[in-house]
Structure formats: structure tokens, C-alpha cells
Length: 118
Image (cartoon, helix red, strand yellow):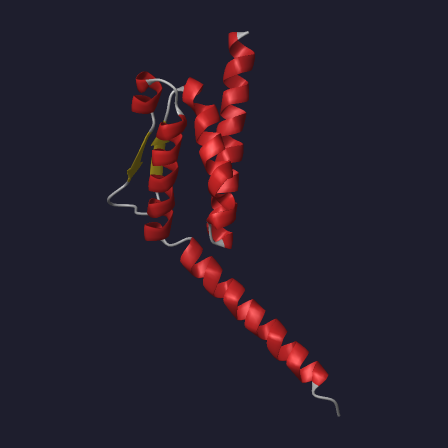
């Protein structure tokens, strides 16, 4: 019997183990807090005015470490989205999925806001 199928199975299992480990670490509160901090700093650096920079901030709930509050003015949301997009490829898989969903939610909020204003 050829060793090729065994090597394929081992390779597939190793990739599966890596994916599972990535999911576990990607949703760790410390990992998320680190990425929120990176996104906050980058969004602030992208904002053209001090009042927009001042509106962007993140707070992690001390009692519920998986709960974060990301605040920004509606006018700063495009800069927050740009910061997320700039960093998605650098994030672990599960973290990327988390922030893609976060981006989707704030994009919808912005669209709702814009449609009610006009």
C-alpha cells in the first residue's frame, strides 16, 4: 500500500488541529482586546479632525471580558471600517470572522442613520 494516502490524512488532520487551535486563541478576550486596541489606534490615526479622533474609543467590560463597547461618532465609522479592512488579513481566522461581523453591524447602523437623516 502506498504511503501517499496516509500522508494526505496526516496533513489534513494537522491542518484541522491548526484550525481548531486558531479558533480557540482567536476568540480569547486578550486577543480580542489587543485587536480592538489596534483598530482604535488606527481608526484614530485615519480620522482627519481631533473631534473625530476623540469620539473613537473602546472599553472592555471588567466583569464580562468578552464584552466590548466600541464608541465612535457616526462620521468616524468610515475610518473605523477602513481600520478593520486594513487589518483583517493579519488576524487569526476566528478573530477575523468576529471583526467582519462587527464591521457588518456598524455598516448597517451607519446606513440606517444615513437613510433616516436624508
